[in-house]
Length: 397
Image (cartoon, rainbow, N blue to C red; front, side):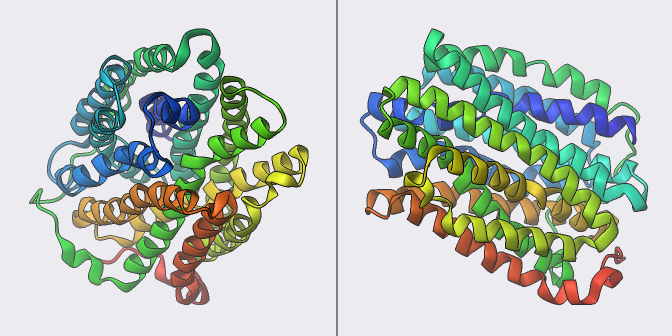
C-alpha cells in the first residue's frame, strides 16, 4: 500500500485527538455550564457546523491548489483551535465557537486526504486503501475518548483537552512529509461545480453517506453519555461514571477502525453499493434497539455496543471510495465538497436532534431509534445501485 496512506492516516488521527473531549466530559460540562441536553448537542455539533461552513470553499480549492498545502495549513489550524478550547471556553457559546473553528480546520484535512490516497492506490485495492485511511478517523476519535476518560479524574477536562491539543500539533509537520511529491491537481478552477450532482449514481452515494453520517454522529455524540448514565444507575459518582463511560465508548469506537478495514475489503469484492447497503442495514437495525438496552444488563449492553461500534463505522470508507471513482477527475473536489456538505450537515443536526429527543422525554431509546431510522432511509438510496452491481463504479468524464 502506498506510503501516502500510511503517513496521512496518522495526520488525520492526530488532528482528531482532542475532538471527543466534549463527548466524554459531557455530563460534567452540562453541570458546570447549567446547560440543557439540546445546548450541549449544539456544543458538540458546532464542530460539524464549522466543517460544513468551510467545505464548500476549501475542497474545491484542491481541484486547483496543491492538496498538500491545504492539508498542512488546515492541520495546523485545527490543532490551534483545540489548544484554545481549554483556555477560553467558559460556557456553551464560547465552547461552540472554538469547536466550530476546529471544524473549519478539519475540512482541509479529512477529504483532501481521501483524494490523495485514492489517487495513489491501484483500482483493485482502492477500497481497502481509502478505508485504511478513513479508519484513522475512528482511531483518532477512539483515542480521544479513551485519553479524555483516563485524564479526566487526575487533571480535569481542561487539563485533558490541553494535553491532547499539544500532542495534536504534531499533525502539521507530519503532513508536510506525507504529501511530498503528491500529483498536481488537474482542474482549471477552484470554484464549486454543483453540476457534478447530475450524475445519478454519485448523488445516490452521497445521499446514503448523509444517512450514515447522521446515524454515526448520534452515536459519537451521545454514546459515552448513555454509558455514563447506565453506570450512574449502578452507583458510580458523576466523575467516575463519565470517565468509565468514556473508556468503554472508546473501546466501541476503536472497533470501528476494524470495521472500516472490513468494509473496504468487502467493497473490493462485492462492489461498493452492495457492501455499503449490507453494512448500513445491519447497523441501522442495531440502532433501532440499542438505546433501550440500558436496563438489560451491563455486559449485554457492552457486547451489543461493540458490535454496533464495528458496524456503524464499517461503510464510511466505502462511500468515500465510490465518490472518488464516480466523480470526473477535474471535478473531484466539488464532488467531495457536496459529499462533505450534506454529510456533515447531518452530523451537525443529528446530535442536536438526539438531545431534543432526550429533553422531550424520549430517552436514549428514542435518540438511538432516530439514528437508525435516518440511517436506514439513506441506505435505501443504494438499492438501485446494488442491483446493478459493479457496472456503475466507473468514473465518468
